[in-house]
Picture (spheres, rainbow, N blue to C red):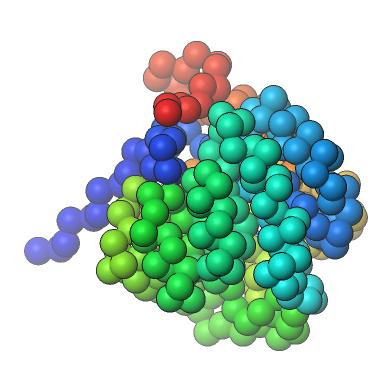
Length: 296
Ligand code: HH2
């Protein structure tokens, strides 16, 4: 007799927010960095970062992802003090913004401080491999995004290699879900992410995108971060800021294959495209409206 598949959560518990996963959610990116690959330097001071975050909420972001360290290929790590200086004032200013705030960090100290300031999701490109990060999330009621990467940002694109990229990413994420369970993190607090562009060639990224259902089968929501990434530049020949249309096509492709959270820079554009696609594909009870569940 085969094992019954794990029940799929119908919502994501993000601290005190319960987000419906009936339709794909949009995570808007706020990079408080001088060197992010597509928007570095645009939102480095508190006022512009907070104004950008509020604009993304007005555009329809369901979650905001605040980051203070670029993890683009070749990026040098940032010290805790510097990352804290960039991120914490923004988190404090957004604590009452009415949307769940995600902190994009791999530093356990910053995770703890962000959670204490009201962050309700930890987006960790190290998938809580640091035991202090695992316990910081386990102790709280926040959600977590467990992402796969091969190597470290500084060198990860030099020569990524896999025997079977889809199987290896799936097995890694499965083991990280199990580690999270063992630490006491409940299923409805966990998101997984194949980590597009993190130690992957064009072929690896495309294989993962095409076979995304292999990951949705793990029973927790899948996040896809494709927005403006180099894999789209290789197809279109365009620079990061001119990859909006390419990003929308990729986001819809990921959503069609089961991604439930789309991490994007261009919220209005993604939201409109997603709303139309969703209304057209959902023939039962389609209202044409894109309604997010923000229960507090
Ligand atoms: N991609 C980036 C950063 N964080 N987190 C998750 N979970 N998934 C991703 O694909 C992902 C991520 C890179 O994008 P960006 O933040 O815009 O650039 P940079 O790292 O240069 O700041």
